[in-house]
Length: 446
Ligand code: GDP
Image (tube, rainbow, N blue to C red; front, side, top):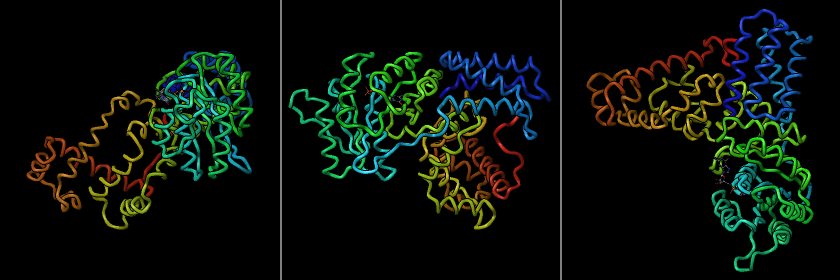
């Protein structure tokens, strides 16, 4: 996600390291690099111009903080400006005060609307709401069926025209879905509308007719972050043709550039509200401008990581492990280690998890080459140990190692390295848990 931009920006800051004061020339040089970084990432020119001007002015200005050195200060300014162009504060969905909340999706064909409709529905369900998906995309031959399949995956019902009833009228379907929602007490209706391959007057007219029929509480414009500068043009066309309240960026997983999508909020004045980064129904979340800026600047996105962890972690188990690590509640064993690893796995791929930690940008290559099967191998090794060995890894001597290697289909050296790493990790984690760990992650090296 935004890897190029992230790399280029960190290059721009490198030259400022170790400087006690920023000269006019330093500021100019850094501003130039930031400009190139943004342009290369495909951020729209007017946005780049404003951005660079603001950073320059603030870097020159009076904002001297005792706590930060000049390089950190520039990072702070860039961070705040990035948050600003991404829409400022996190914009949350507005729900209707009475009756069902209506959310309408608009966007080009292929933008990812149908996929997104199901993702949003599942997300709403997890927030305790009872959504109803509405198939008002009757243009694309397979759209209704696709929504039904996705809806099933999300465990959310789909309201669709009866099959065999001809093509049907999407405005009528949308209108009826509201009746259905009121009758069956669904509290949120998500209307998927038809798109075309390009901006088209008929499509806009149909979307506007659906809008007038269901009077949405929120209209979300869905846009594929991979289409580059066209994203900006399309965003404007939909703003003029249908109007919308917020933007959803899709396919953020696929693009290293994606900067055009970052320009939309700033150019249209409509905030990015959600982001979608993958084809799975769970690859979806609210968009937080501050967290995204922090990710772009390689300061990590620990908040999102914590939130996801809270969703999947078994709190009791985690507490038990923490007790052990802090020296109370017995020793941290290989069983605990295995348990922890399985818990972490529920969060998703290691690549995704590690990518949210601060400073990981510099390790992107290793991250991309991370072999997820490594975790399976480690699990296989631990599972080939006897309960006694897992509880007391110190007893794992040479002959035991050979047996474990055979049992798990690995080499003795793999077993050695796992056991060594376990002791090393336990030492570190214990130090960390007892507060003896020096230094903080984040703005390291600046
Ligand atoms: P619609 O025409 O706007 O309804 O678009 P679809 O929902 O049918 O999506 C078009 C294609 O993009 C499908 O193949 C989806 O699987 C894919 N897609 C949607 N969202 C994402 C995403 O966030 N990441 C990736 N990689 N693919 C996506």
